[in-house]
Image (cartoon, rainbow, N blue to C red):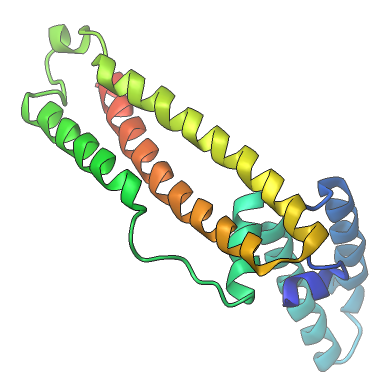
Length: 186
């Protein structure tokens, strides 16, 4: 797991973000290209390469979801290409409702239409998906700690399922917020 190696930290899913930042800044100062301005071309390139890897590593590992996706990919557990079955009906219903709103002129053009209240199903969907994303974050936090303690592959499989579910819920949330933004900006 090259990102963990680059930062000199143990591969874990639950990380102390303050320690991660501190380590990143230490290594960034050590390998900053300006410190190698008088070095050989190969040393300068090494500093540039090391800095690029450090930046990528920090960007990936500081966020729990991107860290977990990276960890799973490095562990040979790719994302599923199919939505979780329990979300299929919900995705279909939301897409149908959004299309219906668009078809009824919801993309408001006149001043009087802009003053209409936001459709309640959008507000409810936003609340529902926000709550689902919060629950997923809590589940991931618990499973990250469980995996780091016991190093069981079953925990990684469970994390994969939750991340797959999260991806689809986040897409649903994005669609709802896009429609809300259309309403607000028109």
